[in-house]
Image (cartoon, rainbow, N blue to C red; front, side, top):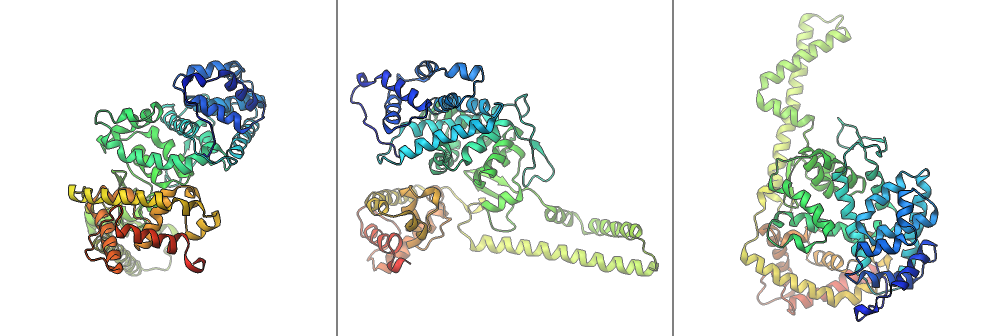
Length: 515
C-alpha cells in the first residue's frame, strides 16, 4: 500500500463529517485520494473503534443491508468498505456475498471497488500503516474462522474437492474456504496484493515464534485477531503428537494458493503427516522422511515404496510368500493354459527373484542417497539431526552482521527505488516481493557471497549450522578482497560492509552490460 495522507497533530482534528462524506462517496463509486486519506486519518485515532465505525456505516444502511440481504451494488461497496474498516467483519462479509442470489455479481462489485482504491493508491507515494494493518488483521480473522466454523453447516456449498496428495479422501469445502480463495487470488484486489507482499512474511514470522508465545507479555504484542489465531495453534507445538482434522481446510487453502510451506504445517497439524507431493516442494531431496519447518517436525506421508521397505525389514520370507501367492493367483485368474507345473514354478521363482532384487536395489539406493545427502548437505532445512540451537557467541556475531545488513538496506534504498520492474525481473527478484527492499538486499548478499538463494536468512540467527555456512561465505569473500583479518562477520561501517555495498550496486543491481 502506498497511500498519501496528512496526519493530524491533535485529537481535535478528527472530523466525523469528513469521514461520513468519504463513506458516502465510496459507496456511490466516487473514489478520490482525499476520501481514502480521510479514512486513514480516522483509523489513526483509538476512539474510532468498531462501535464508532458501525455507527457511521449503519447511518448509510450497512446493518440493514447485511441482515435483510440487500445485494445492490452500493450496498456491496458499503459492506466491502466495512470489511476493510472492521477486520472481524471480513468472514461474515464473505459468507454474506456467497449466499447472495447472484454471488458473481457481488464479487464483481467488490473487486471493482478494490481495483479503484488501488488505482487511486498508485497516484500517491508515502506509505501508510493503518488500512494495511486492518487488511492484515482481517486475513487473520478469516483463518481463525476457518478452523472454528464446523465443517458442515446449512451455509456450506456442497462442492466436492479432491485434496491433492490425499488420494484416499474427498471432502466438502466449507463455503468460507471457497470465498477466501476467491478473495486472496484476485489479481487486482486489496487483500490479495497485501497477502502476497506482506501477510505471507508476517505469518511465517509468527509461526516461527509460536513456541515462545508462552512467555509473559509476548502475546500482547499482537493485534486481537492475530493473537487469537496463534493461540489456537500453540498446543500443536507443545505436543507434536496432537492433531485436529478441523485444520484440513487451511492446509487445502494454502495448497491452492501455492504456499507449500504453510500447507505442510497445516497438513501435519490436521492429519499427522504431509502428502508426498507437498513435502517434496519444501524438501526436494529424495528419500527424506522427516524435517523441521517453523520449529515443527514434519513427517512425510508414506507411499508404496515405504510400505515395501517396511515389509522387507520385517522379514524377507513374508514378502516372498506374499509375492508368490499373488503371482499364483494372478496366473490362475488369467489362465495359465499350456504351462506345466514346473514352468509355473520356474516363472514364479524368476519373477519373485526379480521383484526382490528390485526392492533391495531401491532400498539400497534410498539408504545410500540419504547417507550421502546427510554427509554433504549442510543447508537442508528439513534435516532435524543436523540443526543445533545457535550458541551465545554465534548469536552475538549474527547480531552484528544483521545490524550491518540493516544499514546496507538503508544505504541501498535509493538505488533499489530507481529500478524499473523489468530491471527487477532481470535480476531475478520474484514479482510478489518487488517492493520489499530488505528481500532484494538479502537476495543480492547471497548472490555476491555465492550462497544458495534457498538458504533461509531467518534461520541464520537460530541455528549454528546456518550461521556457520553464512559466516564461512563472508570469510571467503573477505579473503578474496584481501582483508587483513577475515573473521566471517560483517560489522556496521566496516570495510566488508562497504565492499558488499559496492559489489551489490555494480554486480547485482546494475550489472555491466545488463548481465
